Image (cartoon, rainbow over all chains, first blue to last red; front, side, top):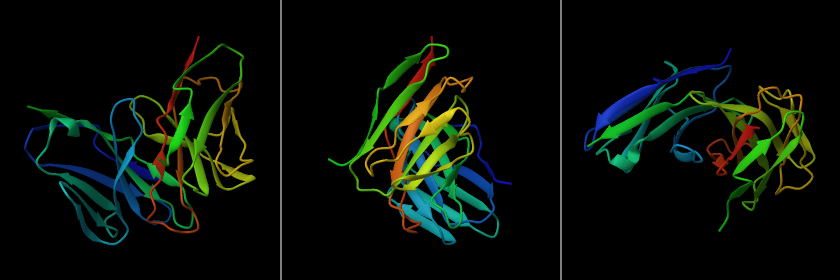
Length: 110
Length: 115
């Protein structure tokens, strides 16, 4: 079966660091994506990992361990505008299909 | 500017009525997708198309139909057979041809409600 797990909600303080975890069990793996989605809006692409290790992109970093079926998104120097849902998605091997987790709703407080 | 356009933004359907949601992209992407998003749930794949004149069912295709007559367009019809159509519908597109690092790009969505 296909399963992607993320925490439902998280809270953090402006200026802090937060880590959003994602674990997956899929029939084949061909990359993991993180998207940001503000309420009522379209998801926007944040990061992509296919090899083990850390990918850094400004305030956002994403980590992957294929052997553990685990990824995390690290957000540094949190800003109020980072309050959004963060979606983890796995690309199924040999297709263009993505399987999405339920998303993690992050609230950043002053 | 290139992008994906979904219309309308809000749509209301009467019981027993079919409605069609529009999705157009000018990104020259081969693959297009339709997702449904319900509150507290992730995106669920309805249909996808990797090339013109071809499409495949996703995980929740029952009660929906699509066509892909042009590369730029992938309309979704919500039929009367779909018993719980109220949801936020998202269209996406991506470069295909095995380029696995290419993300899907999303339109702004259509929110469908039952009258």
